[in-house]
Length: 317
Image 1: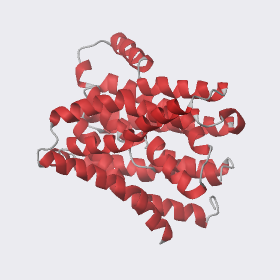
Image 2 (image 1 turned 60 degrees about the horizontal axis):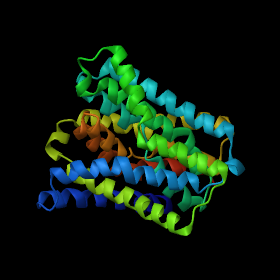
Image 3 (image 1 turned 90 degrees about the horizontal axis):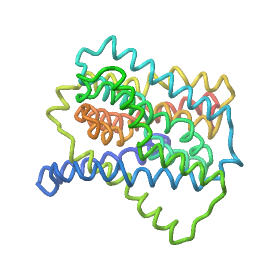
Image 4 (image 1 turned 135 degrees about the vertical axis):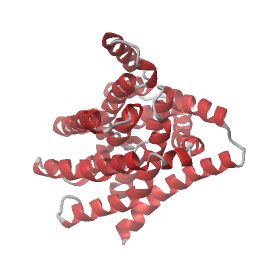
């Protein structure tokens, strides 16, 4: 019961903020232009600041674990390529493909992941290490699949798509700030208090603004028409990935904070930034929003079950 209450306390407030955004849109306080501008602001400003703050504030050299980082990177890679391959075979509506793949493999590692780890273990270095291993690849792979499957790419040759994907990766603000944060941490740089507080204030806007925007952009009737791919993606995200890879992580000796980091990487809800990227890169924003909402609702139950299982078998304490 304690684990269920803990999970509810993490996931339900996130869902309620999305519901607030939807409600404000219905009464006319927010409109489509707000959603468009806020998505762009989130993608280019607040989310990069959030990741920069989280990574640059940790002494990476002191806590670095190569095996752990490599596992996070390889697990994320395996999930992405297998899901994309499966989508090519089984998903009939090709317009949904990019959104489905991104939302199925990409977790809310930076937002919900750190919250879970800190609630269980206090301030932890394993969260930022997991972010270093997984989040750059989340963004790189998302750029690749959204570029190749995006609506605007139907008449572009393969060489053009590869070139555009490389350009999009190089100019992706989230990827850039992750590596900037890593460089700052490795160099041991410390900023004046005024800079730290400014970065912190901007970073704090990322999650609530992303959730309000996602709720405001959520199209309920259109989402209901896509309930089957939504449920399929939710099953992959919350159940199938951890079922396949958590036992492998245990076999490699990962326990405690490291195991929780891996669980969050594999089984936490789809990150709201998926919606931002899907909309900005001309992919199916409706399906993406539907998957984010569904995984956020269901995660309070599935994550509770996973935590119970991991505690029962002694992989976390």
